Length: 605
Ligand code: DUT
Ligand code: MG
Image (cartoon, rainbow, N blue to C red; front, side):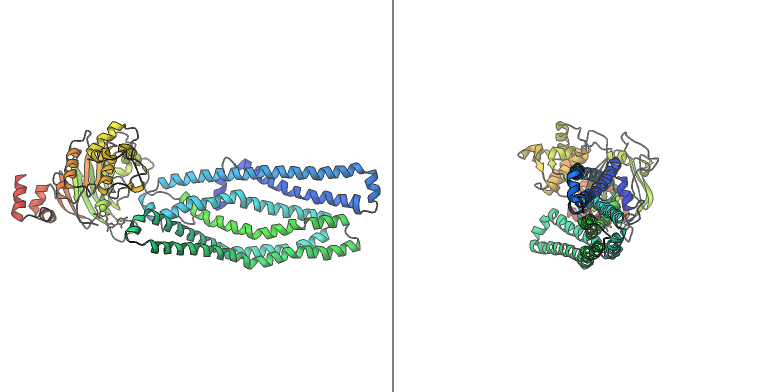
């Protein structure tokens, strides 16, 4: 896959995240500070309870203190409760901050990605599978959101808690603190080993998810093929396999932590033992007060839990890493076909002259050129027909006109302007295209016809439907133009879809109309009707028509015959008949009559 700059982004993942927090950075930093504050506040309870124990419960003059200094006792108690309540409030607000910022980032990146995907060129769409793209804008993006909402918060929580407690421990009794903390670097080492093991697992996991989604997506949109071949069981099995693969990889990823978990857990469990043994000795020797002992034991969880949490955090961090890689690939991808820096605006109509100058073309992923040195000119308002056997390059040729692809050699000009100097939108707005593979939107028929120009009214929609010989069948439908057609035009026949697609292409009143085998599925009679109305459109329009039937091409001003990407014959119907080449043979084949008659018919015309 050479489409994007994989792994070679202008920013690191965290820098990229930070960039997308624009506008919420201040509040996010406040949120992080809040996290530090509420974690440090955790120390207040053991601090005050330690004080209370020392002064009023276990000290030598505890009773005396309680009698003479009860104010202090209540003061300490109120502080303890007050800080606990304050902490609760901060945690609450903090949670909202993280959630808010993460949703803001999610919204922003999602829109950005959608925008990016919309503006990509054809090569992009043949590179990425739909299911994979869907995974990127859903699952992967959610992992990014999770990073902002949870992972970063947990990192700060763990480190601030651990750090605050460590400092407090040293402040109380440095010897005891040292004994407890000396083993903690070992945890970091274990986590480091764990990271190396789990990172590739997350990359794999993510691929499996994309694969599963792709199967599901292809299967659902291709359900008719599945049914036609009665391959339901096969498809179910295929999905089951992908599903199992994903589940297994998920389990395997979880198992990685299980290998490291006993060591981290062992170290965490060791802490209370050290506390009891070493603390006990210090207590006996009088090197530590009972209050300090209580404070120490009351806080031991605050260094054990961050250790335990590390594995979780690292796991989530790696998930983010794998997912953000995929998101950033789209985020930083650049369409190769885009407006030139100095692109010329051309809001007005074209006259409609089309010229191909020595155009050769090869698909990026193809081994051989599919078009060789194509040169021809179509004058404004003329009709040019392109013929040739399947796979000879007809669709590839017309795809160069709206700049879906770019020639590898030569250039395409419209009204003598090289099309790569025009603004893409201006170029494409002037081209009405009915593609070979018809795709209609889940919308009403009217909505589909007016897709390219939603400003046209019902009357005009009906006019274009008439041009494309679609009005009859549309008016026979129960809800007429308001009939909702499903995805890909479910509920319509092939010929009906083609006619709606033709009406859609006409409805933008293009200067250039490109029809790729658009009447292949309609009957001869209807096709004749369409040909007739195309001749009498109420706006000037150059027509490029790919067709297989002689009846369609016969009346074109010029006919091109393509063979293996070369133009082998060019001229009018009569000129080509006289050549007695491919076109002549085609006429013979299609009309089913012998040479003499073909020649006669040519003479008549
Ligand atoms: N091709 C690719 N990649 C594509 C599309 C086509 O490599 O994305 C190849 C297949 C074929 C050649 O280019 O060998 C020409 O294809 P095209 O679609 O232009 O053929 P066609 O003349 O339109 O055939 P058909 O009459 O079947 O529509
Ligand atoms: Mg084609």
